[in-house]
Length: 237
Image (tube, rainbow, N blue to C red):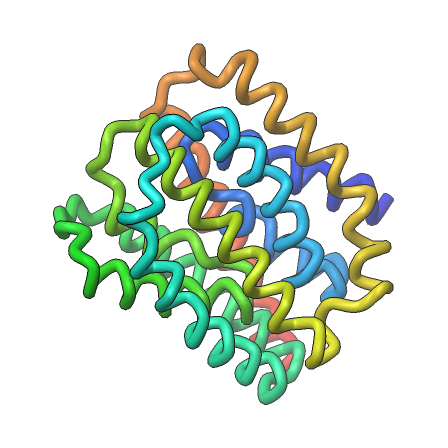
């Protein structure tokens, strides 16, 4: 039952991410952590790597690697900082950090900010994404905020390309500190088919779902997911 519940969460998260460009970890990670801390961050990042890779390949003609260079360079020290947090924090604190990250992402999404994606801002967003993504698997919001006013196909393409590089960096950083091991890899294996199925459903039917409806649905799920993680922290303490 635990694996089935995890697969359902990954399916929903993958469906949302493949449709709007990000959202898999934001939706799934806090609830997956409540099911088992083993799911977060490593296995979620592995799943995100598969989904992002598929999306990046599909939208490869719209990818601007030159524009993402600053963000990827900023991602490296941010990932190291995120790994340091993993070494320092206990599971309950990580649950609180997961929930807080999600609620911050929801709050950011509600503000119609328009920030030009300059190289300096991309580097800062990349650093924050690395810190959040490596420590909690939720690295999408800083980059999504900066790129949100691009055309939809450019947004999906560049976020997906960035996430491919980001996931690889985070996994490499997590290996030496014990957060990406053979056990984590085994835990991730049943989740990958669920993620691929979510991507397939999104590719086949996603265009028929109104973007605004999908946005409201994903924000509601995020608020529920993030709030539950924070409540779990206070119940433990």
